[in-house]
Image: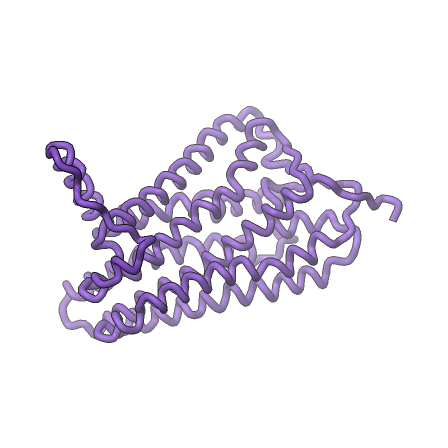
Length: 337
């Protein structure tokens, strides 16, 4: 007990001694962060301005893009600081906030991905009932439930973790305040915290994952019953982007958290953590823009609108907005998915 102290700050080691590679990695990760921000902002703008994209699927996508911006922002700035200046001090409160905010965004992403898979399930398996089943009330309920679940779930783990007594050694061998490296600093038994965190994490990841897998099993079965090859391609094209994002997210997240932390070296844990904190958020808007024909068409329409507006004396027609769903929802029933 003589080594106990009131911890006011932690020291994030980041990536340690990189032997001159830190500026090279700084440029790469900074570029990834900028692409993530610009890509997701572009998707938000396109969905907001194009009335043809004001459908339930793109309503969820706008929520997802907004979440991805804050998901990576909770990690990237401090990580870039450690690459620029070396080990970086983070206050105790700052560590708590980062730990909580990152956990909240991760949980909300699991729920949103499940909501998006349910939307695709209804669109493909019940196309006639889709407009009535996936109405405004349902969309808002699913989205708000995802955000609320994300913000409430980590509260217990955060409270239990940061009430532990910490030793004088307060160095976190990671580039952000994650559960495993923080628990290593505790001077008391952490078994209860670890079991509680495991149970909560299992629930908020496995339940949405199982629902997503079940949705796609029904989707595949429904698509295989379509007689024409062109019809099958059209059906699969409406959910291929989402399926790619689900695979990337759960694949990288599961690589780190499904295997006990003790089996990973610290450097491997950092490398794998980079995939779901930096790489995947960057890839997601690229997947939704390059593999999504509706988004590509929307970009061309907006460019054509702006080009014609420049050549005309009058102002361009007022754009729609995904944030004013009440005015746009009438077009959803006529939209083909």
